[in-house]
Length: 182
Image: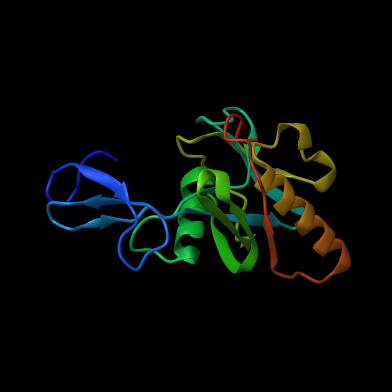
């Protein structure tokens, strides 16, 4: 960041009084520009024993498979964002369940949160960010073509919980290499 979005003057990195880390601060108007992690929200949509995955039509990881997910928008709850992303990426109609996984990804300043979801019909209409959307049995999951480690980990937890018959909230930290994001 080079300029203040409040007044247009130059900003400098400094530790504001009472803070403990450098921030972009405007000497002209006094605005402190905080930069915080982004929320990535998604679902684990299920139809019977099958899981819905989308094949990415965008970078990073073009052509790889993922759960329907994307960035939270201002003015929406985490549940609303997860449901919206599922509709936008897969055109799937769902009944949203409880939160299932929360994974911190500090190197890219993100938090990935997935909700369990039950599909209410099998009609799919993938949006422009997906090449296709389809249902997979556990044995058909293209593990070597999953887009991100957060998705692989969430799917593994889901299948383990499904086998045990007890679903719980999972949390973890995944350290990505910034250069590869995988």
